[in-house]
Amino acid sequence: NEIRAARFQGDGCAISLASASLLTEMIVGSDITSVEMVSNEELLSTLECKIQPARVKCALLPLEALRSGVSQYREAASKKR
Image (cartoon, rainbow, N blue to C red):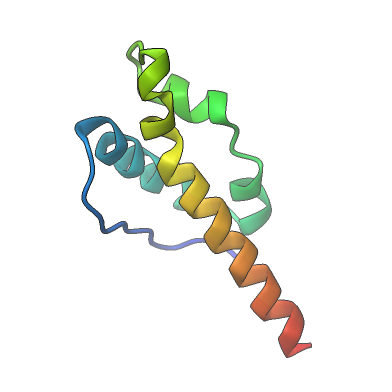
């Protein structure tokens, strides 16, 4: 099952919005298992800029939201079986 489209909606700082935008680009064309394998380091390196330690949480917030969504998707799918 390939992810055909990804979008995000939210308010946040420039770092979290940039991270969310890049994350949507990263996951389109991937399957759920590949999405689950996206690491914190992979997303941070995709930003191509140095993120101050106090702002790393901002950059990783979209990935946390994605992981939560994937978990909910897997849980709903298992209940359908």
